Length: 330
Image (cartoon, rainbow, N blue to C red; front, side, top):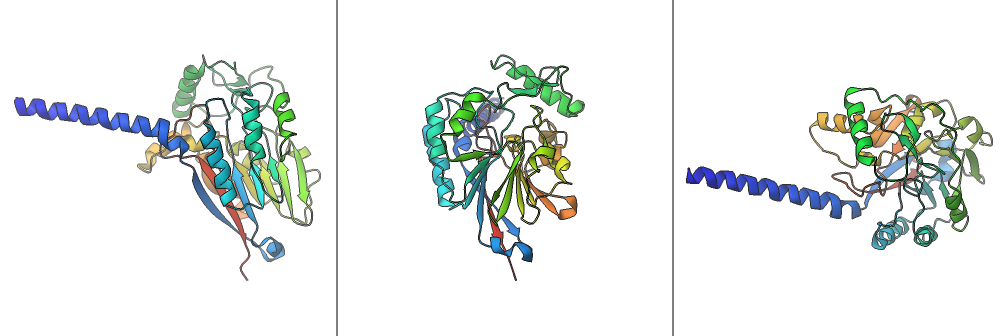
């Protein structure tokens, strides 16, 4: 009996210690561990002139007052160490449509540099009203308070596991305007916002920025109006569920975010990751993170794990900076 009590006690203490270690790691360590993902774009001969070009992609900063300055400096230094020619950002500058500590965000964006420019699209947190799934599971304007966060999380999980992730827009939801204060802030930084528009770096490449899907601002028919079909193209679209709608438009690489790579991930078993993908809220839950081929391999999609989140909680899904190297092999 004594030995049994010792075994039980040891098991309980070990479990408690392991739980505390995982909790501490997920809350205080991994959210600050920036990881670099590296991709290679194997160029066809007609785009050989891009050989050596370096494009860095970031997403989902979700800047809020609780984000440490040391983490912002770490992001800036990591990006600089990669020597990007072009820096792209696929949305969610802020969190819940609230611009907090404006000066800190502006200083961070002004610390970023890329000789051929910094380009960005908007995410669903970057409009006048925050739009996401409500407590009924419909896409709608969400109150900026955190009072419904747990209820919405519960609905998202149950809907993903047992229901349909098909997007249902709330009756009466209108197209949302970009966040006014954020727009003013961006004008004081080197970031060029592309909101349903194309921009050409002369004789080099198109960069296209789409509006967000949830805010009813996703308008590719407008975004590609000035696209130069003789040049390759990079497309920024916050929500990866838009990728299949872009298959018949020009462009070579789509960069998205939105999912935060699930924030919690497991290397095994596969069923665990399938479950986590389902509760991401995507209509196409397999697009939760990583690289995908579209249009029979003619187009690629990369879904970034992002830098922040509504909660800075991560487990085996660290914040990410992605480097795309353009390589032409004879």
